[in-house]
Amino acid sequence: KGDRQHWTYHQAHDTGWPIDGCLHVIANGGDIQLLGPPAFWRAQKRHRLTIDAAIRTVDSRPGVVATLYWKTFANDNFVSGRSVPLQLQADGQRRTYTVEMATAAGYQGAITGLRLDPIENSRKGDQIDLYSLAIE
Figure (cartoon, helix red, strand yellow):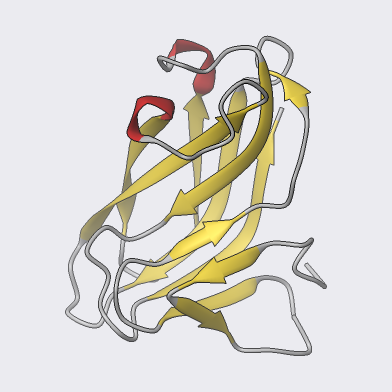
C-alpha cells in the first residue's frame, strides 16, 4: 500500500513516489514482468495465491492471460514447467483473483520466489494497478 516491498519490474515502470494504495505499473513495450523479492516457504504450507488488481489495456481487450511463475530451492529459474496461466479481466475494474497452487504441477518443496507476467503480449501503455499479491 505504501512501498514496493522489494518487487522490481522488467519492461515496465511505476508512477513513482508516493505510492498511494497500490503499485501503478505501466508497460514500456514488450512483455512486462513483476519480479518478487527472494523468499522462502514450503509449498504444502502456503498454496493459495490471491491477486488484488485492476488491469487496463491500450486496445481495450476485455480480458488478458497472465502467467504466474515460481522458483524453488532446487531450481532457481522461472520456467514454464513451474507456472500457471490466469484469465484476468482488463476493464480497469479492481478484482480479486484466487489460485489454488496445490494442484499446479511443479508446485512442491521450498518455494523461493514469484514472478507475475500480468498481460501476455502487452503493449506500451498497458497498465496494472496491483493492490496486493499474497500467498497463504
